[in-house]
Image (cartoon, rainbow, N blue to C red; front, side, top):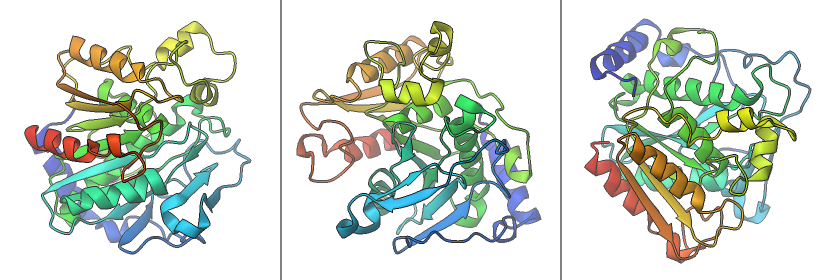
Length: 326
């Protein structure tokens, strides 16, 4: 894990003192759908996201169930990726980056973002929900486009540590479904630069202190692959080498950060064996791993009463974070 506490602290302090986060970003127009109370949104990049010359899509934000409000917000064809922050009521000095799923077709910002952020903010964590670009929308980075946003998002979170009063070395992550694939990519592989540095934010180190991978897409190999995520990421006719390169059980770095996994046996979208494959790969590299497998819950159980058998995962992850000092 590329993260030295002294260098992280020094970078965060220097950035805050030199620029001040309030003046580091351009003005940002809020979406037509209002933010939930207590949440603040900021752009991920200080201008247009990189590599957009060939992008012709139009960003769409909508409510899956309008009668339930912003907790069902989703975003298609993200053009302006963002972080949306909610502060902890009683801060514990740590932060979490939340990466919603959506099969690399969309971002389930509400159900796997806002709802989860409230739960962990109540437990003391400053939470940041990542809205990220899709790999098939024509961005120059192609399959690496979501990773660009995840890396920038992690660095931006860390740059806010001084202002928001959390320890930049105590930043964890939670990823859901395809967002779990992206969280694994961000946290369990040796960091590599996917974009040219733009500003002081990009001097912040990569690496998380711990991560949760929730019903994650892990392998892109049949028969366990989620075909939709694989096609969005790599196209319909990906070679075996490309599939291997983007299967997260391959090339897990030595001594990865502590990883928590949760999956339901009756998941008919992403087979539960994805979590088992990832747990084995992490253990083979000496990682600390906890894997919760639930009797029922299906796919996308999120949090709350809809899947009572799987509803205890947030408490289990909080205990896991506490054991590992996050």
